[in-house]
Image (cartoon, each protein chain N blue to C red):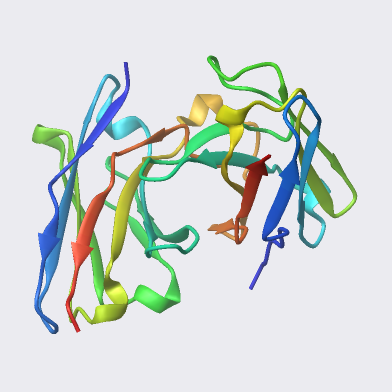
Length: 126
Length: 106
């Protein structure tokens, strides 16, 4: 079965960086995008961007461009997301989520997350 | 940028039908997806491609769309359905989530 297992909770000082990992199993790692979604306490879901594990291509929303880097290690079937210049506003649970395999899609807008990691709490004290 | 609008909260009595709406420009022309999230847990996909249920999702969950609005309907709502629900769509290579709706079963 498909599983995404994330690294453990982190506490970071303002201005530092954090790198969260997401280890995939149960499918071919390079066959589907890995996305990252964050959720501040009591708030909604915020999509951050995507990474194609096959090509390494990435896309980030404007808010995170220049501060977020998504990478992968295909030999380990693991995706990584690094956020730099942390502030207290980055305190949140960060989820990785798998996009659909191309053969499961019925058009460009058919993009959703059937599999999620368990989440990683990143705390940046103010 | 594309936006999806959901009501912040919906209340329903056990056994009744709950409806949660999600509005967005021309939402009917693109796929809408729904997730359920319980406190301290990861989101779970409950509806995809407007109306389909992943395996393991009870039949009481259904989805529909009309014009600019997608609707998640829970028939015979149970106490275990109390959760936050998020709609999601894809626009111009960007994933967009609605603000979420807290469903209270009382």
